Amino acid sequence: MPYWPGREVANPESFNNTLNDLWQRPVEWKQMGARGRDYVANQYSSPALFAKRIEAALAGLATPLAELMRQRGRARAKQFTPQTWSERFAERIENVLHRDLPQPEFRFDVTPPRDEPGFCLPLGRTKLTIQLSNAGNLPLLPDGPAEGRVWAQVFHGDGESLGSATSTRLPGIVVPGQSLRLAVNLKTPVQPGDYQIGFFVGDASSAQQAEISPTFHLCVTVAPQRGGGEMDAALAEAETLAALPVGYTDVSEGLFAKLKRKLKRALLHQFQVSYVDALSRQQSAFNRTLLSAMQELSECTAMLEQTILGESADRERRTETPDMQTAVRRLSRRVREAAGKLAELEQRLERLEKREQDAPAVVVEEPR
Image (tube, rainbow, N blue to C red; front, side):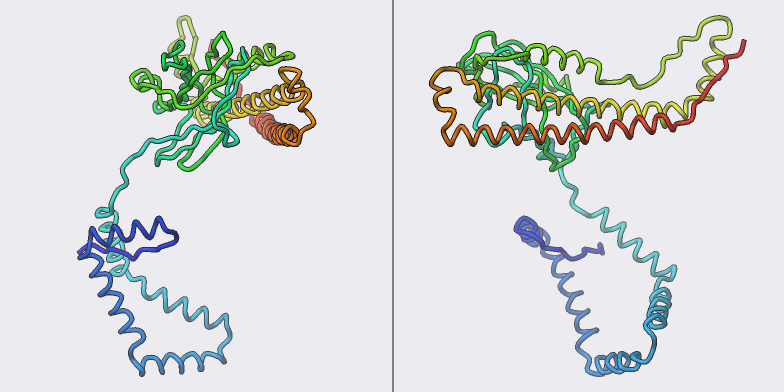
């Protein structure tokens, strides 16, 4: 008979799941109830056993606490006999084999930052900050065979797609329940106006097969920018250099090329896999995180500049209203948060450089 342990109820969701399990498996729950009643009857229903426990507790008052703990430890150790271990191990195996496995669920939520109803983007900017949340039970991976990317597609007001979808790599692993801000690549329209935008998370093949539907409103405005184009160009160039290569391609040539490759692989393969490739992946993840922070800082600066300068004389006349002052304070707070993230990333970079300096140098002399 399989062993079904009890259930712990910590919140309304777990209480709902426990009730559903009780409805689906009434026989097992009756068995658990019977075992619980037997335990209570054996441990607490006998007056003689209760009196014996009280007498043992009173007699142990004269025993030092350390000695009492040693006695209890020896008594408990006697319970772990090979037979008891085999029985409990079998119960564990039965529990694992008969448990209800959760169905894999790949689900994500993309929302505008700061709980806004839609997105607003200056004309010519090719980056858009989103709030990405992993609402499934599978992690989102930044690289490897199961690499996940965020795809963005812009639509006209009538739902017609505007160009092809653009992809953005994840800065790191996004575990279930985790939420992060991500600056995604975007093909912005050439004319200001009201558009729609949709998102999809998946690999390249799934994105080509899936249909991205418009989900949010996208407002493209003509905003005065001072150096915004140069910043976007610099970030785009840095993004192409953010991912460091992983692996090693031997280019040995000549008569003893095969022997050289074997010697290099025998001497350097473990060092490459355990240190060089691992450091390369960490540095790539750090670069992507740094780019995200720089992009968010750039957007905060642009939004703050747009708020202060305004788009027309009417906005300039309303700069002293309470709503405008609140918006300025909120944007200033975002700039300070982004600056704090940059300081943290600089500390991580210093630690990575220190690890690289402390690593032992390996020099291999090729046979002549």
